[in-house]
Image (cartoon, rainbow, N blue to C red; front, top):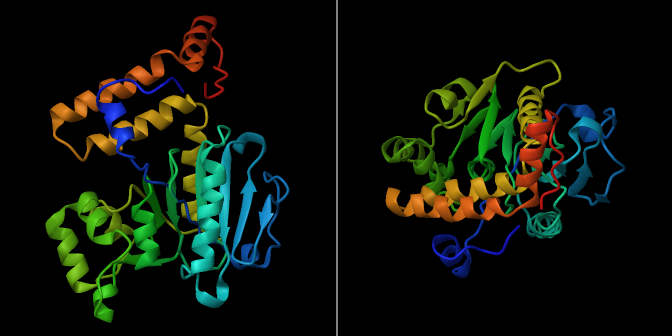
Amino acid sequence: MAAAAPGALGALRTVGVRLVAACCARLGPAAWARGTAPRRGYSSEVKTEDELRVRHLEEENRGIVVLGINRAYGKNALSKNLLKMLSKAVDALKSDKKVRTIIIRSEVPGIFCAANLPVPTIAAIDGLALGGGLELALACDIRVAASSAKMGLVETKLAIIPGGGGTQRLPRAIGMSLAKELIFSARVLDGQEAKAVGLISHVLEQNQEGDAAYRKALDLAREFLPQGPVAMRVAKLAINQGMEVDLVTGLAIEEACYAQTISTKDRLEGLLAFKEKRPPRYKGE
């Protein structure tokens, strides 16, 4: 990517802007938890830990990375060790220009629980996403869920409050009044109810394999793959930072972000591909 442009974008980076990450979590069938599901479309496992597995998808899914959480004994609760491994994996992926979308999925059937990355991210909720699980989903760019999924910030039932960003991200997603209602009541929503209030973008009828939301997330990730990698990252930055300021400042941020794409090789490749009527071959440069 070109050097930071002066003005709004440069100022944002100076103060250490964090790019809120994506998680894509999938609640798969028992076969995934046992490790017996078909491996087509996956490379050899890059890293295997007791609680976290990292796989790079191949073939038509190249560019998509799957982080599989496997803490069956703790129902995927976020232990210190798991957070440490997630942080280490994220640090490794952050600088990998070949990575286009990150999917964080559960390898424990029926439990959703999930990262600080500049690439697009999707949360796919096929089962329970309560408390911290929903907070992790709220940190994602896009959320999809099965109609049978259950999600909610239920911490007030335990005489505490959401402590992983829920009190800040939920109001930004669905509005202050409704967010207060859901947090005060500790209400649990199914997929249809979550779609109705704007908490998720897509709701799917669950399939026999129990992975309808994951399949939709994968379809969306495939839609993202052909686009310019630099443009995708900068678009995410412009949207995220622009939503936190007034319109005039937001337009200045957009202008600064747009400037980042002008001198890239990808932009020239896009123009040439259009002229030659062929698919572009972007390299993230």
